[in-house]
Image 1 (tube, helix red, strand yellow):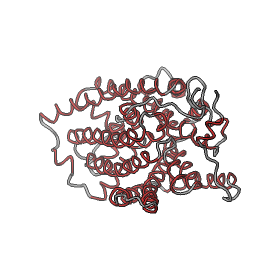
Image 2 (cartoon, rainbow, N blue to C red; image 1 turned 30 degrees about the vertical axis):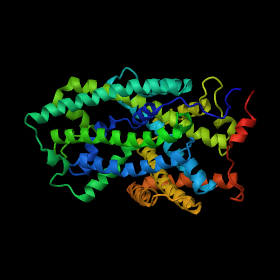
Image 3 (cartoon, helix red, strand yellow; image 1 turned 135 degrees about the vertical axis):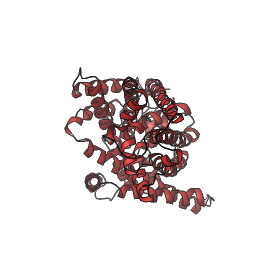
Image 4 (cartoon, one colour; image 1 turned 180 degrees about the horizontal axis):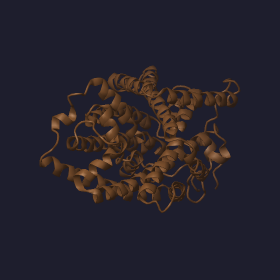
Length: 448
């Protein structure tokens, strides 16, 4: 008897999902955002990254606990549905969908912009077509191919960052402009500046949670998904901290011609224009790996919501019979990506940040809800891991949410209002629970 048509196939191990998470985060983003974070922190970018790493690790621990309890795809949508309420679960998934649906668009657009700058043989829309087409093809074929592509491209990113580390180490071993301690805490730095910069640095971590959307495609998910989530945050945060430390050491202070391109300028200063150009190309390739990973995880979240029936099941809950991938969702995300040139990056980023931090807050609340449920069932759970740490995580995520611009909060709230209206229609005025996929339903419709 063949596998049920509504079930994804487990093919990924621990190393593969860590690579997936790191590819999603795109470690090379530290070079792109360094200048902005250095200016915001008043010259202490590595410390801001360290604070952001600790903050995201709290939420990663909560994701890990929930992934162990519910090793199913769907991320916060599944967790909130099981532990809080099916209607709240829908809204949590709706908020996360806001994050995930716009992330591929932004990732493709940024990659196309930088490719056009360095290789103007094609216009931005031409490069956009290329990167969308290639990543869509990879994801339609399946996660096995996507895994291989991600590993290859992430390896190039690692080589590029390692090269940047080497040239920066060579620079600081000679006559460095700054000092080690000054790079961690400059004279003008303050706690307020560090926390404000950490809120920006936290955006670099968006994507570690995407591992939870692949739970049904991971071998031994109860064990590997929690480990993969935490390892992704710690490894990514370690890379961000080391690279930012060396760049701040080489270039102390906040005096940049353009903070948004400070990373490129520092690479050119320490190793020449040729090195900076090669470094830029290699990080762009790493950015493409992020595009593949983002599209894959978004399609899985949409698939689970379609399989449940809260989105039209025939379309969103469809798996290709040969590739076992949610082809409709992948193609829909690709089609939306072509509208990137019609939407400003500021607007799209506002959507992404609102959805991400709201979802992170809900995840931490879900862990506390799990603690209450287990206690009622007579199971003793540790207060530190299931109450104290998730409470701290929820407070940190809520704080980051308040640091967003008024425009971001307004746009995100508008998206939630649309979700509430749809939920009212779906549940006939909240009088019934949203539909949910069951194993029995999958078995009943499985072909012999």
